[in-house]
Image (cartoon, rainbow, N blue to C red; front, side, top):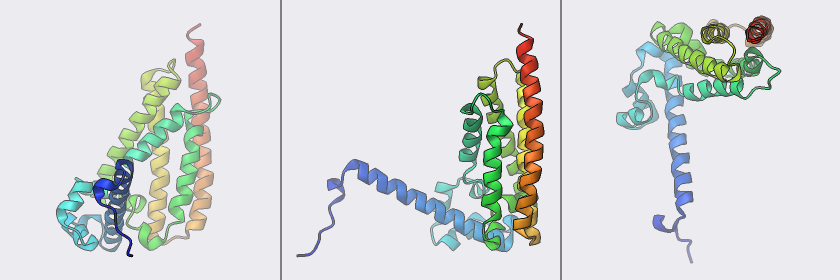
Length: 228
C-alpha cells in the first residue's frame, strides 16, 4: 500500500500556515540571493527587477510581490536592523549607555560582514552603499530612520535628557555605524585582507563608542542634576 498525501483541508491550520510562511521565507531568500549575485556581477545600477526575476526563474510580478522597490532587494532586513537597534537601547541594563548597548551589535556586524565570501559580499549592503551613488541615498535614508528609532528609545529610558540632545546622540551613534559599514564595503571592493580590516575596525569602533558612552554619561548626569 502506498502512502497517501493528506488533502490540504485535512492538514491542521497551524501546519498549513507554518508551511506557507516557510515557503515565503524561502522565496524571499531566493530572490535576495539572486539579486546580490547580480549586483556583485554588474553593480546595483545596471540590474533591473526583470533581471532578478530571470535569474531566480520566477515571474517579474513575483519579485515585486516580495520587494515592491529595487532598494529593498539590498535593504531586505532593514526593518529588522532598525528594530534590533531600538530594542538594544530600550532593553539595556540601566548601567549601560546606548553606545555600549549598541556596541555588541556593531562588533557582531563587523565579524559577520568580514567573514562573508568576498565574491558574494560585493553584492550586499556594505559594498553597494559605497559603490552605487543611487543606492547610497537609500542607505542614508535608512540610517536616518535608524537614528529616529534609537532616539525614541533614549526618550523612554532617559526621559530627563533633552529630546534634541537625544536625537543628536543617536545621530552620532548612527554615524559610527555607517562609518564602520563604509570601511567594510570599501575593503570588500578593493580586495583588502578582511581579517586585518576586521581587527582594525574592532579597535576603532571601540574607541569611537567609548567616547560616545562617556559623552552620554556626562549629558545624562547633567540632565538629572538640573531637576534638583
